[in-house]
Structures are given as C-alpha cells and as structure tokens.
Amino acid sequence: MIKQVMATALVIGSVVGGTGVAHAGVAEIPKGFLLTEAAAVAGPVVEDEEWWKISNSLARQLELNPCPRKGKPRDGRVVMRTILYSSSAPSGSSEQLVLYRSTKAAQAAFRQLRADLTRCPKQASTKRTTRYGYVGKPLRVGDEALSVAGYFYKERDPGELGVVARRGTALFFYTDVGNGAAAGKKIVGQAKKMAKKVCDLPGVCG
Image (cartoon, rainbow, N blue to C red):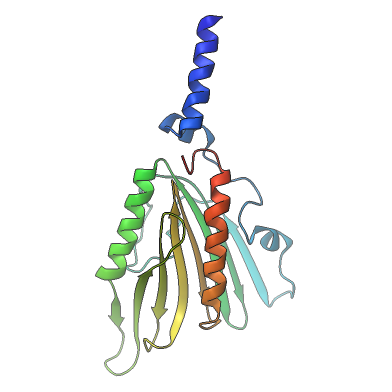
C-alpha cells in the first residue's frame, strides 16, 4: 500500500513539475480548443463561397514554410491541429497549434523556422517584377515570436501575413492571405490569446 501511495505521489509530482513523463501521458488538444474551431465546425456562412478544413495530421508542414520543406516532418511533435479557411474573394487564413515532446524540441523547431526565413528569403520568377520572399521581425508574444510578411511582388505590399509564437512546448501559427495589412493586427491579437490559453493544457507551460 505504501509503495502504491509513493508511486501515485511520484506521478502527480511529475505532472506538476512538467517532466517528460507528464508530456508523454497528457499531450492532446481537446476538441474546440483552437480559436477558430467553433466557426470551422459550424461550416460556411455562404455555401460554395467559403470553405473550412480541420486536420489533426502530424504529417502536415508548418503553416509558415519558407524554404519550402517537403516530406514527413520529424521535429519532435506529438500532436497538432490545423484549421484552414478560404473564400472565393479570394482570401484565406489559417490557425495551427503544434505540441512538442519537450520545450527543447519546440525551441529547436522555432530556431529552424527563423533560420529558414533568412536562408530562403527570395525566389525570383521573372527578372522584372515577380518575386517571392519572407521577412520576419521579433514580436513580444509568449516566450518568443515572430511577425512574418510574405511578399509576392513588392516589399511594401505583403500578400501573406503570419505570426508564429512559442510558449513552453507549444508552437502556434496564425496566417492571413488576401486581406491586406489590416489583418496583421487581428492575427497578432489571436496569437496573444493563444499564448495565454495554451497554458491551460497540462505540461505545456511547465
């Protein structure tokens, strides 16, 4: 009986302390947890004009993928959820939450993305006008974050806006395409909300 009590106390202590044991046992994203999930489950307001997709696949690439990478990611992720929205405008947005096996793995994934933004900044398709590139700037959200602008043609006119932030063992992304610079404030606000909310998940914030 004493051994059972001690074993139970050890497990409880591990969960509270945020050790690897806790991460392995409780890593999950509850249904309805993401900010846009309720709208995605409800479906389009206007049929054949709006589309939602929810995916729990670990094989998806990160929503900001500047190099771009292909193949099945092997970066220590244990669970993730991606929500995609598109409209006939055309415009679109995404929300993605990725939980890693440890804070160290999440930090490494963030560093890799930051390096990719520097290593693969521009891909010219013509000599005169079209080019594509990303610019990332530090952002005060969670433990570390970047505000990212993707440029299709000119640097003063971003076609894609994104935010990636890390809090503990979690990486989360918000992107927007086709809604202009005004969408930047919205996705930063979403990232700030998730930076607080993600700590409700056991083992994420330690």
